[in-house]
Amino acid sequence: MSPASANTAPDLDAYRDQARQWLAANLEPRDPGKPAHVRGGGHDTPEDYRPARALQKKIYLAGYAGIDWPTEYGGQGLTRAHARAFAEEARNYQVPDLGHAGGTTYGPVSNTLLKHGSPAFLTRHGPKILAGDELFVQLFSEPSAGSDMAGIMTRADRDGDDWLITGSKIWTSGAHYADFGMCLARTNWDAPKHRGLTWFAVPLRAAGVTIRPIREISGGAEFCQEFLDEVRVPGDEVIGEVDAGWTVAQTMLLVERGAGRDDPVNMPATEPGQIDPFLLRLAESAGRLKDPVARQAIAKIHTASWARALLGTRIGALIQSGGKPPVGLVSYWKLSEGLRGPERARLLMEIGQGVPLVWEPGAEDGDDAAQEYLNSRVWSIAGGSNEMQRNAISEQVLGLPREPSFDKGKPFSEVTRAARDWLKKD
Image (tube, rainbow, N blue to C red):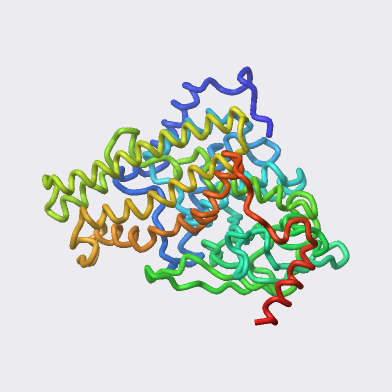
């Protein structure tokens, strides 16, 4: 996209001051000890998100959504520095919490659409996305294609000017209240598996779409499985080029695995160097605020968070330098998240001891620590497992030999036929 030049964009300090005044007059202050995004646990309904959508529209109408988006797609045409300035000011306020679907819409999906969507597509969808009227989720993983994402079996067949999409997607966060799914489907079975793929914007309330929640260990149902039965999608809802979907997928993975966005939801709840107030409250609830063992655990979490911030800065600089493949570089970030989550959760249980195991109704610190423990393995799998990240680092960054591949260069129809024959031998 083409942000406004330094000569036409508003002075950054003046813009920050203007944003600060608008936020103070229009949004409620945020509890610094609470994250900007609170998981809904899968018990939420589309109606639960109406207030957040309304607040998103209020921000959009005030000119603070899509700050660095092109004006023709509903944005303000300013620079990323302006977007970050607003995000830094807004992190002290209660911004719209649109759950996982919101995080996906304004993170991986929006960044990918801006790079690969046609002008007509972006003109049609962009303003609605920024206003909170259209929330997107990723229809990516399948029951038989998780880490091997190019091995998807969902098919899209031409029917005149439209496409008919049939298949199943799984592990989709927030599909039960979203409006569209950015869906990867196979459009050419005679091409190798990384080719012959195409992305579509699939309306999730269309005929032929069935969405079923998946019950999790935490008791929630944030993830869904979708069944697509000849869902009709117009030809102008194709994202990118037909049969060139893997290029689009690389952009999405780049954002999902760490090349994030500047917005209040992604901004840390505390200033760099400041200890997370949640850790102190948890220790206090357990009567261990002065316990040296608990304090050491807090220090470990704090140090890891500080190192995480520095790693992000370093990876960003390397990506900007253009010396190494960006998808390989962000795998360092994704791997760090997959390793950090379980260790942080373990230390929370150590700090809180009995507090995260049994708590009184309304005792949020115990509930939050318990939920974090139960969900601590999510990022070691979601968005590409730790093992896949290590492969990407070794092959794309370190230049080590690739793992042997029996299906490289073969038509995908031949690969699937060979797999079926092999299973019959069993």
